[in-house]
Length: 234
Image (cartoon, rainbow, N blue to C red; front, top):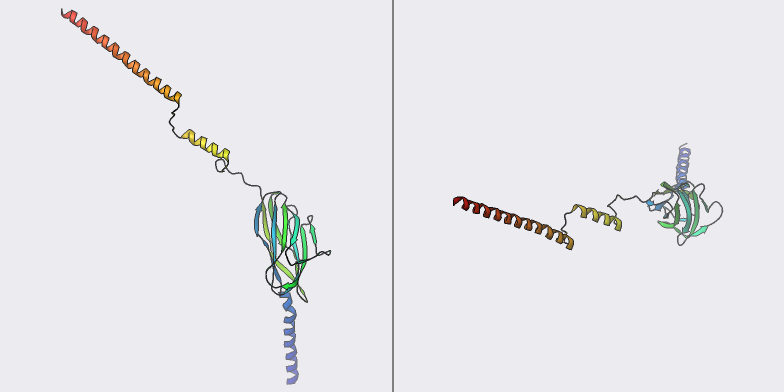
């Protein structure tokens, strides 16, 4: 009986170990990233994102599924990185701007187990808005004898027209001239032009002539007063 129980226990342990051995490949997933993670562009402009894969075990092929809002972005092209052999069969290679799904698959003959550039994807912005480019559920890593789902960190594309700067804050010539004119109108200046000097000179001489006339009039009045005073005294 004891021998039988020991045999059952050994079988249970073997089953548990075997279960872990079978389950290990499912945890050997590949992480993927898009760079830059956040980018700002204007409507009509294009942006290129780099796809990088980082397997946790030796991989020989990757299937990348990218999802994006088709009303905001249009996929233009995909360029595989050096060392990859693209797989162009149906279901493994597509670019659908109606549904907003891009699928690219490629093999890496020597295998990879460290972060490696997979390729670059270029999008064109259609209109203003915030677009999220994410890895789809069909993204897959292919190991030697199995395949596992791929997880990934996507990117945010902010589409907006360039803001209009308030007057006086840009460095354009027109703005600089406007600012200079405004400053000139509020800053006291000395006019040294010939006309201004002439006008000032003429204005000064009028005062001098007027003063001379007053002095002459006063002298004549005083002389006449003294003359009459003498006549009265006689």
